[in-house]
Length: 70
Image (cartoon, rainbow, N blue to C red):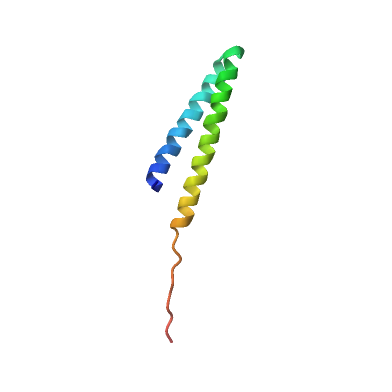
């Protein structure tokens, strides 16, 4: 997966987590258990996507080789 697609998925996951957090803040306790489980899963996905994106960024860095002549 390309860096651009990972970034798009990361943004989508961030929006999902933010929405679930907002829902948890206003929901009643009985339904909160289901929302908390969804939030836990969404946060896990977000963390995984962040790690994947960081890994892609690190692997795309190419060291510069310079030849110095005297």
